[in-house]
Image (cartoon, rainbow, N blue to C red; front, side, top):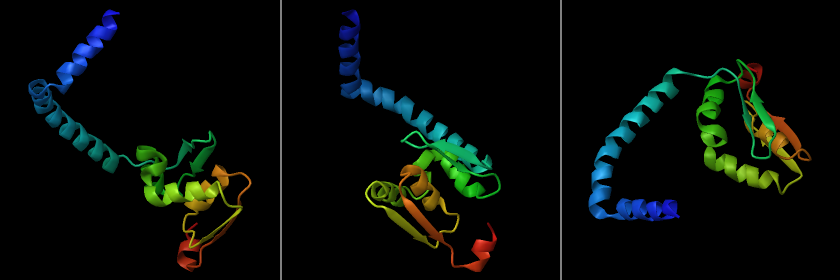
Length: 136
């Protein structure tokens, strides 16, 4: 069991004040630099159309030219990339309700998510603003 002993030794070193201080002094600049690079990539490379896999295994697609900003958020950050708190709450509700009415649907993201999340969910989507509705 040398691996087990090595793991204990590494954990002890990691938790040691002096070793952790030394490691953190190298890791923090690397973390900041990689975060900046990731942010720059996300801002400069936008995804036009995307398909993500939902936790229930079903695919959810945002078609090409139908919301590049939304598609980019989903591409870079997954399902929680767009309004994570609202998305989590609605996903929880989609499992418990039989009908979802999306008034002010805009892109219809939550309507599509609901339909893909629960195949038995009745979805009614309505966008009352003519300019937004006409854009899709």
